[in-house]
Length: 49
Image 1 (cartoon, rainbow, N blue to C red):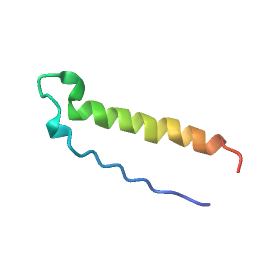
Image 2 (spheres, helix red, strand yellow):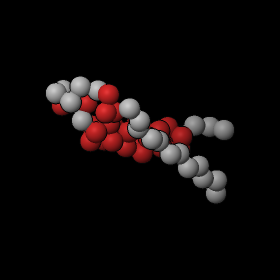
Image 3 (cartoon, one colour):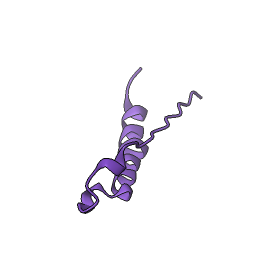
Image 4 (spheres, rainbow, N blue to C red):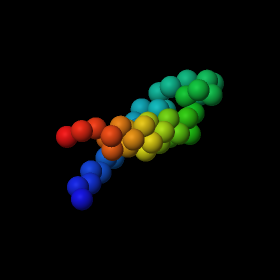
């Protein structure tokens, strides 16, 4: 079995306006978890090589 490890680092979040709750760190973490941990995983598992 072949595995791949992906490390995603958010940098520069402190430059976003703190008054806007959309830029809260937890939103970025949740979005990344969904995209990388779920969507990308499903896509990669279904791609024919």
